[in-house]
Amino acid sequence: HLFPCVNLQKTLEAFASISFYNMSSLRYSFAKGSIPNRGVKQATLVQAKSVNKKTSPKFTMGKTLKIYNYDELTPIETKAVMARPRIDFSKIFNIVRPIVDKVREEGDAAVKEYTAQFDKVTLSDVCVPIESIPDVTLPEEVTCAFDVAYNNIKAFHEAQQTHEAPVETMPGVVCRRVTRPINSVGVYVPGGSAVLPSSALMLAVPAKIAGCRTIVLATPPRADGSITPEVVYCAKKAGVTHILKAGGAQAVASLAWGTATCPKVDKIFGPGNQFVTAAKMLLANSEAMISIDMPAGPSEVLVIADKDAPASHVAIDLLSQAEHGPDSQVVLVALPGVDLDKIESEIDRLVSELPRGPTAARALKHSYAIKVSQRADAIAFSNAYAPEHLIVNVADAEQWVPELDNAGSVFVGRWTPESVGDYASGTNHVLPTYGYSKMYSGVNLEAFQKKMTVQSLSWEGLQRLGPHVVKMAEVEGLDAHRRAVSIRLGLQGDK
Image: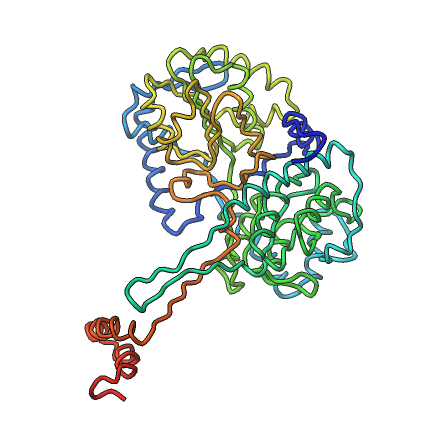
């Protein structure tokens, strides 16, 4: 990283200074209703909450957080404590569906209409090639921060490229997998009052490395119809091919259906508000034939702290996620000796100082601390909760990693705040939440790729394998399958 300002603290400060921290739409995560079997889990949570009303888990009320004692909770009470804040998309779908349908029918004209209605911006053009947008000039410390982040993200995702050797499963039978990029992708970058160029880097950089030919970046325009300069800088650097000057459901619909100026994409990535999320969910199950990375949902962090974890560090790590939005959830798992009073005092002090303190305070109302008596309990609770972000602020943090199974991203040790992953360490900040880190990974290089299997047989290979295929086809009653082999082998009676 041959840049004059390779100082991580300054890099992160530069990011924060341009982001204005309207972070409720920054994180990517899983929300209720995103998985077909979600109803089963919803029923479980409803049941847990129902039981909770009759036998509420015991807690003490601290200055800012509910405080539970893990040893005193029953399994049902523990499950109830872990339940996330709910998201109800039923009404949102009814608002979004007409927008999606109108964009399908009217294309760019509908996008212009909705942008004027929702963003109060009159567009002269909707989607343009990136080269038609002039280069931008930014302060040196800002471009330096972006350049450091770009290089770290690029290095980490390039390292994810793999080459699989062919496998001869039996003599004369060779199988292999080949990787191909998804041809066209859309990346959504929230804009307007918030500047989120980090999301442009997180999504466009791996898309370019994967080899995606078309990368359409959608972001809401500013009042004059232009695009935020920081987003333009990152888009050009990362290899974006088109800029769609729109946000909300109309932007997602444009990417999914395509318009006269906006290329249709095969997969849509990126954070957004509840309307963006609902549009992605609807279109992923429509004739648009698109895939999505994951629906967005509230951000969350779980912090495991020991008695020597600085109270100010623990407090600000919790607040760095609480400030995302009022529906965010933060959890502190406190090992023996942790001074919860001191941490809560720090939270109180910091909330009063932060520009988004009122938002963080609302998130704290459904956040909590839980005291555990031993390391094994902390690990068990964390793995069951399956957080989006997991901070391990303990003395021997690296030794914990082999036992941590479920988290979107893990931040190990005293000197690893979650903010570094949000911006510039190199890992991706597009992560599963709502407990879905039990079975889903965050965005990575493979998210922009697909795998094809290839097999080839020699004559000798078909002679060896063919009779077994013939027999299996007979068992399943698929005679054309059987004859596709037997004719080649010249078996008696088949021509």
